Image (tube, rainbow, N blue to C red; front, side, top):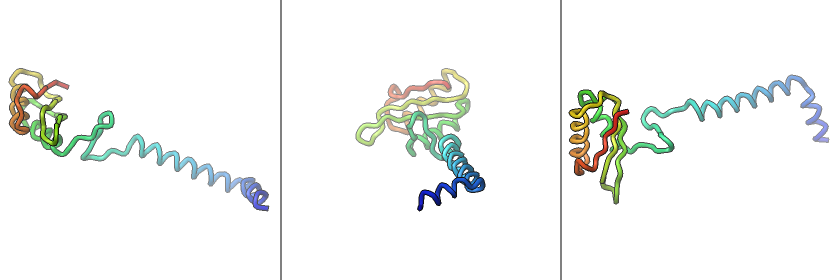
Length: 120
């Protein structure tokens, strides 16, 4: 008896349209969440989410003249920084790179030779 009621219900054109619209809405929400929802504070590159220290250092480095926007990744061992990689979007030059290396090394209390700097 239930199958016949369900079949009769699905024969109704209005019910079919409502079900198709609901399925389309669910698909639209799923696509929107996957491709268009971005958190303003954290961003991800290949699944990597920057730490608070990396975000703070990136903001600090961005204030240096000629550096522009920066992305920082800090390598840690036992909770303390051991090296860093910095990518910057500003003008590439010797002085700019030296400033970035010096500020990064001092901020993390690591040797300057443990800091790698690349232009974007």
